Image: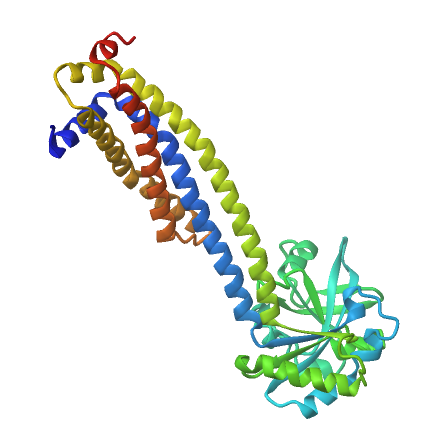
Length: 398
């Protein structure tokens, strides 16, 4: 019986003697394994990036909205009836551990600058809004309490609005027209902000000088300690039901949301997308299995005469099977380093485009075990069939 060392030596000699065949046999496995590892790495980065950004921005935020604002028509309650200055005052006076209670009015307006114009989402806000949402400054100056007190017609715009209206010009201290009013731009928010396509106006300016609207689209509440968000949500809910004289708690005229609900919804979405990615990987794996099986069948069939010669010089069936098993294992190990290197190389290139893909150890191990298993099964099956032939039949094989 041939020793394991001899099998390994014979295996590498066979691989060297058939470089083209071995390379073509491995082409599919390199492409499939690398693509699975890279896609998994990109997905891991996307998932962590989304969740981390949401956690960093809004972990301590509660939002109150009327059902009407979300599109559920309720004849008994609208924003005008619910989200008023009286409610804002009540929350401030009765609930502790709150950083700020910020009323918000949301509308859409046409913006004009010179010959350029665009439709934009407009938010009438308090000056603490940006602090609560962790929105960073790009250039210019923030809204101040003096702007609110003096009812100034000043505006903060997102980077997308600045690009569309002003192109390459610096928009700070430029004036834009919104309806019949002219506003001075005094701040541009950070390029990557969620609100880069919005324009922000002092809420006092809107409610007194422009629209006269006394009710709000939303009320945003920043809790001092993010660990107390659920506790404060319960307190605020109880207070709202009392102030609004709600008799049926199962049919509330408002919606009170916190970040944990949004994270739960996001987790559900990412789980669905993960399942979709898994199905794509399994379908590609099935196609690749068939391809590998054909390559292996042809490869081993071509070596039937070699098997016949070995049997004619008294090689045992187990020796033949061990040789093919060793070749399959050697090819898997030999090219394992290549596809891992290729995966890390692609991930390195992606970092140049600000995509910090994360390669997981599980994806590497699972891909390797699957590839090794497929090589062994689809290499040994035709080899076993050939090894069962009589030496004379194997030698006469064309």
